[in-house]
Length: 167
Image (cartoon, rainbow, N blue to C red; front, side):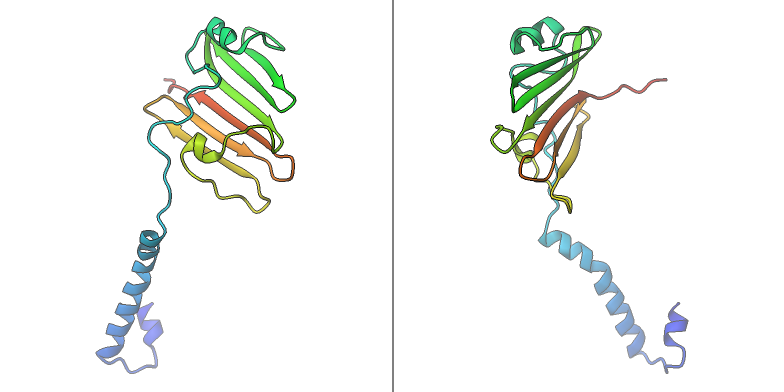
C-alpha cells in the first residue's frame, strides 16, 4: 500500500518520515481521546443487592414475609402490586429467590436512577430510552436497568442469579 501511495512521487528521506509520523499520530489519537474522556466502568461489587428487604437466595417464605401478600402467588413466581406506579415479580427456583424484577410506571413513580442501580450513567439511545446490563461474577448475579422513552416512562430493574455452566 505504501508503494501505491508514493507511486509517481519522488520519494525522498523526508516523505517516508512524514508519512510514518502521521500514521503514528493517527494511531495514538484514540488513546489520547480515551485519556481525556475515560469510559466509565461499573463498580466491581453490585450496588443493587435487594428490593424492600428481598435478596437473591432468600426462601419463598422470607420473600413473602418481607413483601406481604402477593397479588398472584405461585410455586415458581409471585406478582406484587404496591401501587399503580410500582409492582414486582419474584421468581423462585428450588424454593429460593432466583430473580427479581421491579417495574416503575411514570415520572413520579420513585424509580431509582441508573447510577444508583448500576454505578454508571447510561447514554440514552436515539429514541431516548435507556438499557444496560452489568454482570457481577463474584456476586453470582447480574443487574439490568431499562427505561422507555417519553413522558410516562416505564423503568424496569432486574436482578437474576447467573446460570451455572452445565456440563
